[in-house]
Image (cartoon, rainbow, N blue to C red; front, side, top):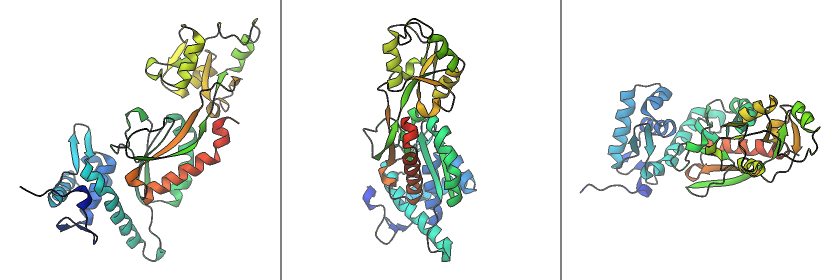
Length: 314
């Protein structure tokens, strides 16, 4: 029976794979597939043909005697043996960049980093900060994935994530970055009109803008449900940006992050609702020493720390 290399035995100390030298071209193909998730996307990144990518990854798997990816209809996912290979392959990648840098004396940060985060943080805060990061590291590429409900760091759907739900499972390292503060907001005209009522602190006559049923687990959605006492929202959406637009249009009151509502010109009726959410940075544990991932993680940490007061709503 053919011997199958164990995950921890894929590399020897001198850089050799179990029984054979790792070809740098094969390592590049392996990393491209791991990061992109499909052979066609990897081929595009590498500027080579699909047949070449297929041949090289199959050659690497034959040399190792283990499958590095499981094949699915929607792409390639790393196996446990593939996960074990990532960090070493990235070390070779960085060594290659350092060699190419020559007299610069320091390895360039290069490669693709996939970041999963909420759309509101991505559009309003993270993406506007990226030009400075990418100008410092022109070899770095970033993918921002905002459909966080389908992202699993353990499966390597993304390399790191900024999210409002603390990961409880999986091979991830987490760090608390701050708090996202929420308040009850409405358009100036709506707030002025409701203030003329007999009891402005009572919400029985108010219209609310909330979440569709699939998002009913969110603290903001649960707060609105308690206030409505069985009534339905005037409008339910799947994004915060839609709720901001609806509130601006005067459709009712919405529970919104302070840092989105205030620049939109909305008026805060209640600033403390008890629904604030902690912001977490989660990094796949195998990638904590990857320079490309570390650079992005450090940038996000500095960015959110610098904006802590704005995010809290102070």
